[in-house]
Image 1 (spheres, rainbow, N blue to C red):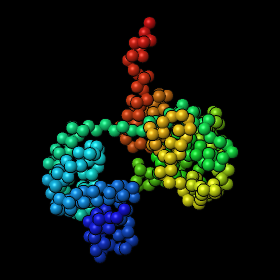
Image 2: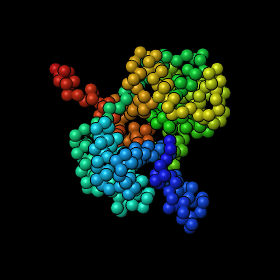
Image 3: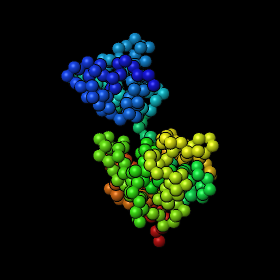
Image 4: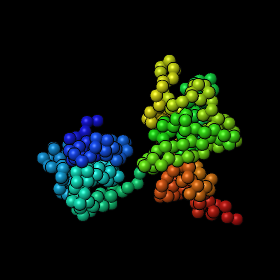
Length: 328
């Protein structure tokens, strides 16, 4: 993606021109935010900048009225959460330009416009369907022990669920991050979306009582079959099924999910890579696991999303109709 010259979250001209900063310092200051965040902000800024160019408006610094007019045009075909994210990108780029105190994205006019858009369009997000524990049991019958691709895919799906992994975390797991024991495997996650400063997290995956749907057993089988010793745990294949020496892409996780969901006779359009992580949290809630224990495995920093999963998991368990039906 081509970056605009005035997108300052990477190549900031003021920082580059600061003679008091070393070259090493300048390079590090280009990475104050995660790569995926920068990429998302860049795409959002490009859209705003192009709109300003088409309407002969100034994008940096922008006037509050320019931002309001932009988001109202955007809201005709975008969700409220998308509009809100664009405002954040506009705001962050103005902050990078040294306009934090006079940031037009923080003006009352922009806030009121955003409130009106939220009120009109609502903020509910339709997420993909969760892959629950019973779904994992269903998928367990869809793999072929004699096919190396199938062995990899089983390990991807089972570990993705058991560790409540984000797609980026899952494909970044290295052989060196695994520590096996008689109880299962401990996996070190050096950095993730919820751990931008790289403090790292350890998560434990115990052996399941049935090896047919055991994540640890699936990893062991995959590592043995692929003869892996170091580097990425999950890797793509060439057309002849020869293993490549690079890590699997995060987009491949969604494709693997859809492939086996379809084999299991379910509608693959309803599922995606996030279905594994969401499914773990929802299944844990259905089994009366408390929020803090779920958060230790999912590595959520806020209880807000976890409580949403708990509410979804208990929709039938705590439904008043069930008490009415079972009343004697």
